[in-house]
Length: 255
Image (cartoon, rainbow, N blue to C red; front, top):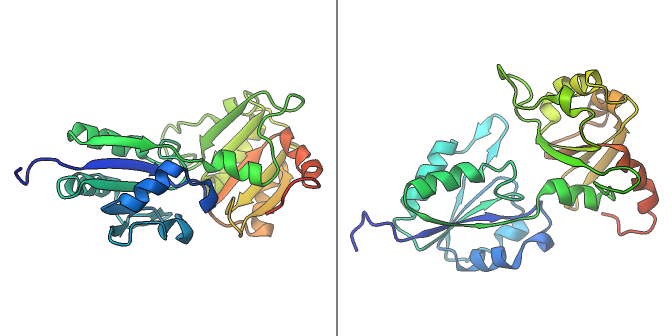
């Protein structure tokens, strides 16, 4: 076999939202057998400890304003590694195909002729509210839910998220990566007709021992963000289902 032949298989693996107990059995098995693992910044130490001790570990995480590698560089690295290793794991927080750029990486690999397997992970948009005792749907409060990224809410000529239209289109809104653009998101939701008194919850470091939940209203969201000094990573949930939190906390395990 020549060096130009692609011999490896890349696994896009979801690491879940943080709690090692939410890692899938398939993901754990692949980490134990991997030759090389490329992992994101927010992967918990407990999950990283499951990686084959003989495997090469490469940190390729991104934080706001600090990217270890660009997305293009990550894709090129995966392609290169597939020519030298049999089992390559690209370990991504949450689910690879939910705001994790897994689709971009998968497409680049497929176009390069590399076999890819996607291993789903529990996404924070589902797990963090559950750990915070917030059901995203409930027959009396919410029959619809939307998952949306706040990362592109500002600085685009034509933002992809129409917040004004979204304001009353669904009952529950779950926003990933929305903290830094809260000043643009909240006014548009209010302008779109969402009630100022709609409950809003910030869920910081969801599913981890550091989880913190701060509940406020849509009209108070920006002020609460400043007063409570909400830190990333944090999820934002908006909707009447948040009213159920106080009732559910009495009978459920609390983080």
